[in-house]
Amino acid sequence: MTIQKSVKRTATGHVIGPVGEALTLACLAPRGASRWTIRRKAEVVAAVEGGLLTFDEACARYALSIEELTSWHRAVHRSGMPGLRVTRIQQYRDFYERRDRC
Figure 1 (spheres, rainbow, N blue to C red):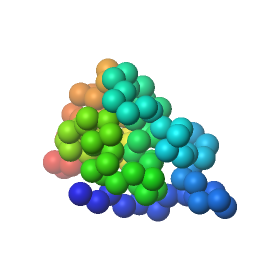
Figure 2 (figure 1 turned 30 degrees about the horizontal axis):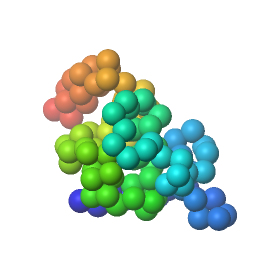
Figure 3 (figure 1 turned 90 degrees about the vertical axis):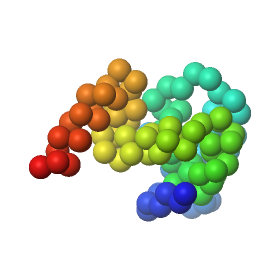
């Protein structure tokens, strides 16, 4: 699966992360991370969009399902970083489902 979006890059070719910092592979969560903060999720989405990782590499590196990474991507693009809050997922999902039906 390919996720494409225009991603800002610095002059040195680094991908710009969700809060404006340059991202490199070294900046990302360690392999096998088990605690996922909003920022970490958004950084992985930005890394995939910017070409630091492919979609498949991100899934393998972090043991994520295709559905989980896709849901992070969708949440970031629909609602920004707040959409990644676990406590708000159902609220945002219901909102967008209602909106899409109209």
